Figure 1 (tube, rainbow, N blue to C red):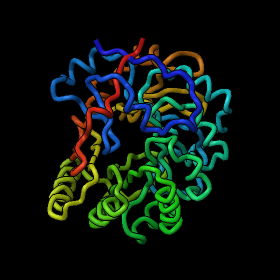
Figure 2 (figure 1 turned 90 degrees about the vertical axis):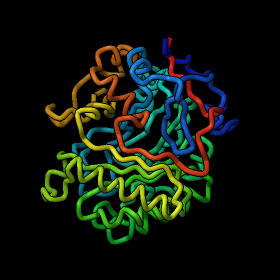
Figure 3 (figure 1 turned 60 degrees about the vertical axis):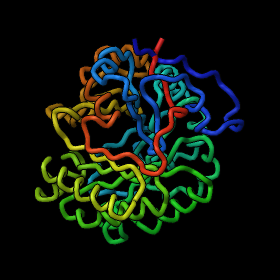
Length: 346
């Protein structure tokens, strides 16, 4: 039966790199790859792993709702106070055993204490989604402590500036991350009007030696309610765009992993998002208010209890294992079993 490994005893974070943690875990059916995503061993069965799991592979924890960009697709426009370090410690304790935590926002690097928060989650595979504009301030302090930073970038300057924010500030932060030796991935929100920019986004990802390029379709919430209807791709159009980009990836030997999630019944509710108040919700649930289905509060109960009432378990595992989405693995650096993460929970 799939169980979670016990949480790792606290050690001096300065004494080890972020990658040491998953390299040292016991072998299991799921491992974490150089493409910064999970992969299921060929000898394992998704249905069995999902049915027997007693906790999630990945959780998104919003450490702030504040942001210095005003992205045209942003769904997180309603503000909340930042959680205190004490509240985050309580949430951390209740997330014990979850293999990966995204310390998200808003823009998480706006928190001056972000390194303290990262240290708090030592022993977990930590991803930090960021617009990189505070990279210069935090890059060196984050080095060796996070598995990767995931930088939002829609491609060339004009496209990124129109969709997200200041391309040049983003790239200043990206260079700071590179100088500090932080592993990078990129994510791009895809509109119909940005389809022609996707090859440039993948070229940039390749030049940066990014682990992956994650393509995201907007959802009608927050700022995205103001997007023109024609900007939203159909599921078929998204699949065709992915296939074209995958062909170019092969033709030009671009190496980052490539992933695209379309909003279908198989991906509904696959994310577990934790708000600054500790509220855990399934996202996106298409007929729920604000696309969020409440699950409980991680200030009050464990992720195991919340998982027990979560009704999208299969969708969660299928998505994070790349089986309900469009996915191509990183090339020239095949996943290694030494990066395995056992997914077990006492």
